[in-house]
Each structure stands twice: as structure tokens, then as C-alpha cells.
Image (cartoon, rainbow, N blue to C red):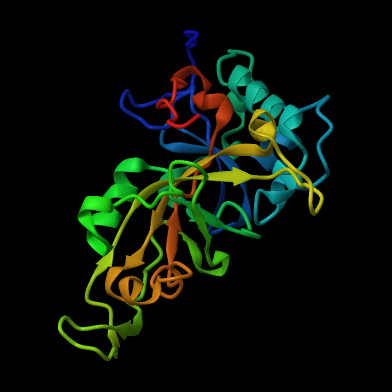
Length: 281
């Protein structure tokens, strides 16, 4: 990673360093939801930065930073969104930055309310961790044959409910559903007694494709804007009864939480490592 230094005061252990600069949607008591970038314990108001001329020369859609989601900004494409992040990073390292003399463009996170960063049009949950897949297989099936034969050959996934994705901190209501008590042949309808959480990462895809088009693995990064932390809330007792043969439904659809900040692939690039060996290829 290239060493760069910012004039902006950043706590030494802050998640939002000059190397990160994630995008999100925030509001305050005096402003409507709008786009921002986190740094230290503050937020750069991108609409205010735009009005200061910070992004002059970048072909941005008027009002793109004043939207209630980042969808329109992300759809401008990686060449533009990456350039916006780069210009902002350079400005936060320049003593001549217009941001230094305009406090209105900088908001303290403590007075901001965070919102869902994107409008989620669709959502697929993939079963990509061999440790997780093995553990769930042991819980629900034969422990000696935890992984089904197809798991090593294709990206196993299920279609989730996008309408129940909420920003982190939103209360999740315990779901009701059918549960098969131990030793019983008939299910009962009751609140879930086995609500579980799962630490996952979600990829925010913002580039459109035509119906029937194919996106190769080599092209994937052109479509991925960034990543968020994802909590796939699960009602294990409801899931166990309903998931055969078509997979999760009500045991998974009552709520999913995502972090409010999207960390871009640009920020993660210096930390790229080789993945586990695929067997079979």
C-alpha cells in the first residue's frame, strides 16, 4: 500500500482511514438523506463537496449526490465512481483543499442518521464457505456426509427476500412459523426458538446486464461496486422443517442487516490474497 498522509484529523484506530473512504447515505436534523463518504469519525457531504467544485471535470449527473440511495451514482460506472473517490482522497491530502475552509461539507458521525445505502432490486445468498456449509450439513443432515455432491462444483445459492434487507441497527422481529418438535410427526405454529445470526459479506452489484446475457468471472469486477457486512438472520427451527427440497424460505426472509458503509473494491485491492485452491477446478 502506498503511504499517504491526510491533513484531516483521523483517530489512530479508526476504521475509516484515508485508505478506506467508504460510501453511504446519511441525513441530519437539517438535511435530507444524501451521499457521503466516511473518514475518521466524520462524513464528507458529497453534495457540498460537489458545490465547492471538487469534482470539476468529472461527468457527474446533476443532483446525483442528493439522492436517497447510491444507485444512480453507482450506475455511472466504475471509471467515474473510482475517479470521484480518488479526487476526494487527493483533496483530503492536499493542504490547498477547498474542504479545509468549508466546515459545512464535513459532518460529525455522531449527529448523522445512516440509511440503507442502496435500493436493493434483487438479492441472492450464496453458500460459498466450505466451513459454513459443512457445519450446516452436520446440523441438518448426516454429519458423515455434510456436503452434498454438487457443492464443490457450482455456486450453490438461494433467492432471498430483498424487501426485508435493512440497515444495521434496525430492530429485527422474532418470526413465527411451522416448527417440528423433537419426536413429533406434526408441526406446530409458534415463535422461533432458534434465531441465529451469520457473519457474511455482500457484494453490491451496480452495472446493468441484459436478460439472458452472461457475465464471466473475468468481467465480474466491472460489475461489483463494493462490499458491505451482511447479517443473514436465520430461524433455524423453521428452516430445518421447510428447507427440503427447495431451500430456505420463511426461516430466512424475516430480516437481513447490512452495514451502512460500502467499502469499494479500490480500497480493498491492496489486501487481495489468493483464494483457496478449487478442487475440482
